[in-house]
Image 1 (cartoon, rainbow, N blue to C red):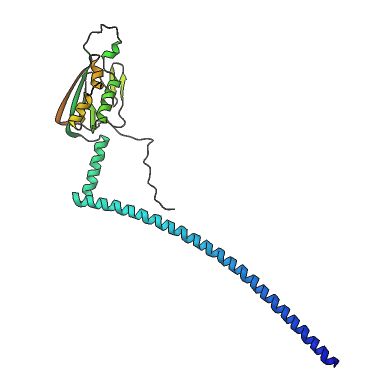
Image 2 (image 1 turned 45 degrees about the vertical axis):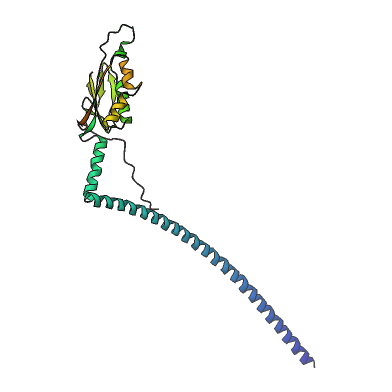
Length: 247
């Protein structure tokens, strides 16, 4: 009887140990599985972030490609209309040379002759009022540019972006060359608009005539302005390179 009781107790102990072992193993597996799930989720989030970044890059590249495609189409259309890419580039070069003043041009426009006053100074005013100065020439040039002049010259000196107009004693420096009155200014553009700009009420001509400065303006259906004859050298200004868009 005692032997049977001992056997029952032993079996009960074995079952308890087995139950404990199974419980511990299930908890261990559950904990391990949670850690695995957290790692997998973090990895998935990282991959999703990378995917979003690549999608943004692809979208930016696509937009840039569409812009290039539009530009290429524009060039293609111009080439088809004008007879080829070489023709388009030639036109661009010609426009650039006109804008820079490096080439001679012709077209409608006006000629302006300015001479010092012949009046006798009987008022006691400053004698400088009766002669032409650099500021007088600059006012005329500004009015012409404002009226749409496409090319301007003073005494044959083509004005470009780096041209200077300044007094040197009784003379005026233009493109490092000295000139004295009378000064002849020629401008290519809409002749009527340029002429009206000179003679607008209380404009530059009216202000000069107060002191007897002689101003003669004439229209022309076709006048020629020579290109800039000096050298062009840029020591400091450099072109800005366009960004490639890579990154």
